[in-house]
Length: 70
Length: 272
Ligand SMILES: Cc1ncc(C[n+]2csc(CCOP(=O)(O)OP(=O)(O)O)c2C)c(N)n1
Ligand code: SF4
Ligand code: SF4
Ligand code: SF4
Image 1: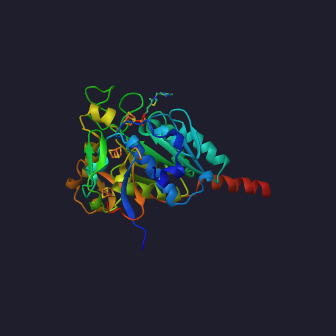
Image 2 (image 1 turned 90 degrees about the horizontal axis):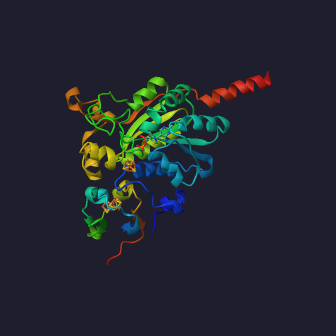
Image 3 (image 1 turned 135 degrees about the vertical axis):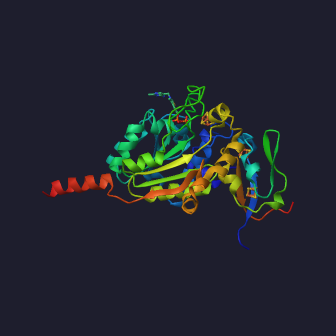
């Protein structure tokens, strides 16, 4: 099986809550909850990587591996 | 819990960085690193040089040969480094103030010599570090702490300035167009002579607040709505381009590179 990307990993300690990743996620995977971002619909992620590219704080990135079913 | 890219090229003990929430400088820094990674440059053969400013803090976070110099002088130091070590890939990280106000003279002369340096101007249209004074790229009419009623100066176009002075590669990207920005930095590094990439960044804390531009998300949306790719712009009537700005590769005209020309002279004298 080809290596897939597993969707976003969030490093909460580094997230400064700017909201950029959530605002421009094309699949509405991400949502701001207070001052932190949460992945609310992980299954919808298309692994486009835009969140990682535009996070000023390196607090979100795509993890390699099979997508968890959970 | 950090991406391999960040682990490979950042000084992990210096992270998280101290830029404000939503500051575009982190996005530009990542684009520089991504370009270096995609080009598979040897870390020990790269030297990253900066001046002073929020933008110029970037090399402190990066695990390369780095030099944090004095305000406006990054290109002068970088010229010396490149001269002494022509094999090094010298990359300058600078701000709009750093490279076009106090350092404007160094910019035009680095461009004039077409020395093999790639400069990435983190252009947030303001002096961020010192609290929001207007810079040579603050648009006319916009406010800064030193222009409370609106700036009456006309702004510099960093790319046009560098091109007129002799740069062989000029390009503009933005933090919204981060993929394009990475590609432009890569091509700038590949160009042998002097390259400048005007990386339009956002400073929500000063430029944003002073000019009621909203938060970082709003400022990114503004970039999305006002940037036009140079290829698309060529097909558009002038009125459609009013109030817009160009992104993409703006100029590329390979010319003899300074340290190579210098080497030719020294070798001919040795032979003579
Ligand atoms: C010789 C000198 N003059 C002035 C300063 C004060 N100073 C520090 S950073 C800066 C401007 C920074 O603006 P810019 O280069 O646009 O970078 P930014 O902080 O916006 O990223 C100034 C005027 C200084 N450090 N040294
Ligand atoms: S872009 Fe980064 S810092 Fe901003 S909300 Fe998303 S994860 Fe947090
Ligand atoms: S990779 Fe794309 S779809 Fe997935 S969370 Fe990030 S921005 Fe959204
Ligand atoms: S003051 Fe502006 S440029 Fe400096 S870190 Fe804050 S947002 Fe970034």
